[in-house]
Amino acid sequence: MDTASPALPTHSLRAAWLSQARKHPLVTAGLLLGLATVAVLLVNSLRAILAGTASLGLTEGLLAGTAGFLATAFGAAGGLVLRDVGQKAEDSMLGFAAGMMLAASSFSLILPGIEAGRTLTGSGTLGALTVVAGLGLGVLLMLGLDQFTPHTHESCGDCGPGSDRLSRVWLFVLAITLHNLPEGMAMGVSFSQGDMSVGLPLSTAIAIQDIPEGLAVVMALRAAGIPTLRAVILAALSGLMEPLGALLGLGLAGGFALAYPVGLGLAAGAMLFVVSHEVIPETHRNGHQTPATLGLMAGFALMMLLDTALG
Image 1: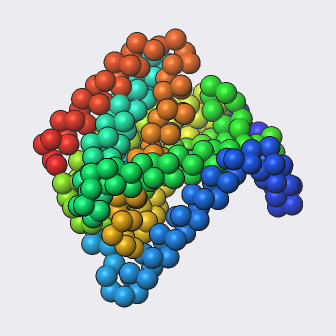
Image 2 (image 1 turned 30 degrees about the vertical axis):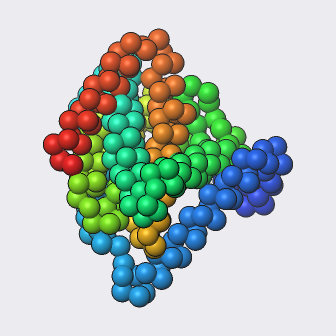
């Protein structure tokens, strides 16, 4: 059962962040660079909105983010019926989600980003470099958020400054938030130019993998001692990060022309970081590498089919 922990005072949290910054100066610099870039892109997007040239896919992006939330809630609701799906099945489901995220990053973010960059720069090399720059920014942003946000992992325990002063529930919630944010950003960026051939397969894939992911989150929360109903509610609410992330993604890529391939690369980098840093290690920690890998391949294959059929 989760026990409440005292709230972390603001000055204590500030001191913990400063201590973390001194310990990891390169990560801190990368986070600041990523946040500065995001701020610049958002300001340019705000200018576009005020000028009447706002992102074309605003409605579609918000609908996609809402679909991700509903899919997460649907998967989480399964926890009310299923008392135990078994660790092997849970690792297989997470592997499936990882496979879809990997394929979505490749086929629905990186490749369209390179094509958009080539069209804008007139050079395949420059177009690819534009996406690579976005990839790097996405990784820097997620690495910094991972280092500076208190959260928990089943595989390595509590992470981030101030994690010892927060309850287990909030550490799980923050971990789920870090996981869902890139997915929402990816959906928003993919619709930012109103291109259904990019946004529809990506958003469909993310919504599909959100169902087993939502159920897996409930199981992890229950394993931490959180009551079933509370675990289901928390897992479902974690899906709200997807429409919020979609708004952020729409803002990132809607300001000026090159922001689109950069934004696609940034979303891909963030998703690849989450898959490699969190999802795959989580699926392998219980000795179920083979079913998790088979799940990953199944998810990757399904995403390829979706991208071909809907793209």
